[in-house]
Length: 339
Ligand code: TRP
Image 1 (tube, rainbow, N blue to C red):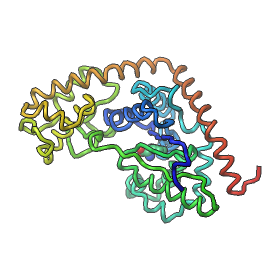
Image 2 (cartoon, rainbow, N blue to C red):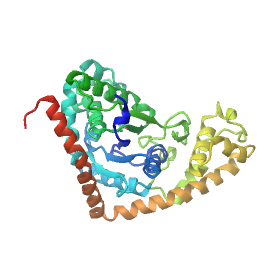
Image 3 (cartoon, rainbow, N blue to C red):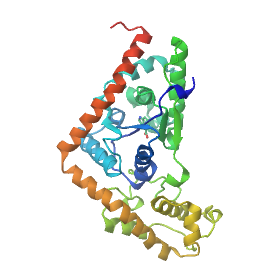
């Protein structure tokens, strides 16, 4: 079915399972805010707490991280008036549609999911049933809104394919054109932020070295120090993109600069080609501090007002349910559930 029948709607989710890094900001939050502001889509953003608990979460930590993630969304420019911003557990239709999808998705499809294999590791027998069903809940997150576009990282591509397979099988089995074929919007290489210690690894909140990442809660001194100490090679910066080919650390810093300066990598290199890192790193630090310190300041301000955050989440869930309730009711009807 042509997606033109569905109104342009963006959905994306982030797990409230760890602190936010520069990688989350440039790869997800900033893009989410941009998509909200472009005005081509209705935008819906979710803290996927039900996904987080597919692996063990300390309850008090989970609450704190959910609120911190909400503060991170808002501080990054996601406006809870313009976008719908909420936590997944408070919109029960996600879990309800996921159950229907558990009856649509095939064991064989789920067995092929590489993220499950990675997360379950060697000890698959001991993984939770929820971890196995994770992609079915993710399909429900997306399709309970009839979302047409989902901005995600490269690593989520397979889950988006599964979402389309579930939608197609549901439509086919029940003889309807009810769920759209949702398109992933994959992040560009320039927004994939790598570790400051190893340019071949993604910047991650789980890396044991705090020097490998910039946290959205880092203050100006910490940001500047981490960028100053970032690993690089001894050569000067190239003037052409080709010159970054075998230099992952150099490329990462140039990508970060380009994202902050709102320039292309070509433009950045035209300006800084020939400079040594000793000169480039302070320029990058200045730019990073200027853009990130208002975000960390706003996050800590919001974190001091828990009631305000909870109010925003409750209001977001109410607005979300205006969309999800009729779609779930229609789904139940299609499936033959009497009400
Ligand atoms: N699985 C996604 C991740 O780990 C998070 C997620 C859950 C998600 N539901 C979603 C992303 C729906 C996009 C749309 O990044």
